[in-house]
Length: 220
Image (cartoon, rainbow, N blue to C red; front, side):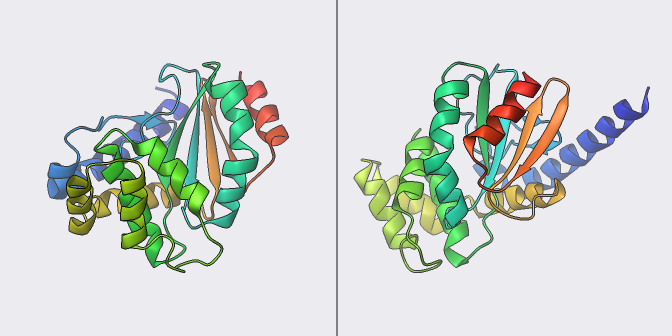
C-alpha cells in the first residue's frame, strides 16, 4: 500500500471511530442518515442533504453559520451562478456542513434546518434563513420563536417542528459538524472544500464566482 493509501485509510478509521461514538449516544436522531457518507476527508454524514446530482464528479462542501454575514453575501452573490452553471447542469453537487460558532442562536438555527429536513424541507428552510438574516448577531432574528415562524411560513407541521426544536434533537448533530470543520482546517465562515476525483482543494471566504469557476473548471 502506498503512502497516500495509508493516509486515506487512517482518515477513514478516524471518521468511522467518531461516527461510532456519536452513534452510541444519539442513535435516535440518525436512523435516516447515510452514516458512511464522506466527501474527501470530510464526513458529511451529519450534514445537509446533497443539493444536485449525487453522482456528480465534484462536490462542494460548504461550511457555514446562518448568522455569518459573509455567508449571506456568498449565498446571494456567488451561489446563484454556481447553481446555474454547475449544480443544475449535473457537473457539481453541494453539501452544507454547519460551523455554527458565531453566537448563541447559530446552533439552534442549524438545528432548526434539520427539523425542517424531517419534513423534507431542508433546502427551503436553509434558503429562508439566509434570506431573512439580519445584521446583528444574536439580535433575535434567529431565536426559537422566529425559527418557528419561518417553519410556519413554509407550511410545516408545527407540532412536529416545535417538538423537534424544543427537544434539542439535533444538537449533537450540529456539534459533530462543527468538529468536522475544525478537523479539516476550517477556521472561519464561509469555508469550502472542493472535492474531485483526484483530490480536494480549499477555498476560504466569500470569494466571487470567478474564483470558484477557475477551481471547478480545473478539477473538471
